[in-house]
Length: 208
Image (tube, rainbow, N blue to C red; front, top):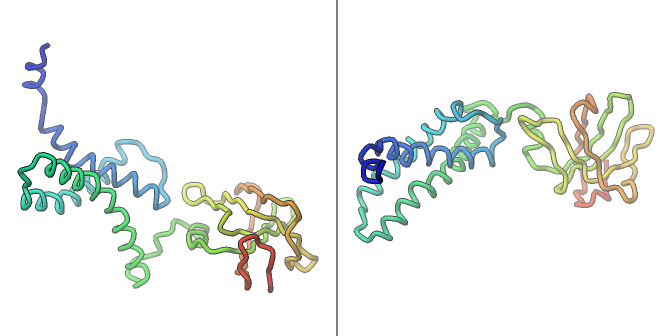
């Protein structure tokens, strides 16, 4: 089959649908997955949301393209790049900000998936006491160098430093040379959180 015959038989409507709706939608979904905890899904499961983002983008981008209609090819190219790539990358941030505003106004429920996510998505430092399943208790500092997994990996946590506890459960001092600890959900059954009165990035001062 020659190139001319191929071009004649090619369904250009499908290509237009892909460029105008599907591609912008999937760009938005990829950005959304980077800023909002999301589970992995198949292509078919993502398609409806991708089309939804694509329709939102087309409602704003199409009038802009029609109104401006630049005659210069490079100007038209830049405009299409902005509307088909730039705008889709922006929508997830606007949607997330809108949801957070609606939550603060108590119009919608907390968008966090669970209590763990609600606590650690605040990105605040904590002193923590982890109750292991074997009965031991471990003190630690969750600071800006620590990490807590969120949905769908809620419960996984990295504490940047380990602290000794006295018999009453009070924090004494950071373990010398500690590089922290990694814990999985199966390792413990309870995590207590304490807000430090003196927030030190290296976790060397705690006053309770």
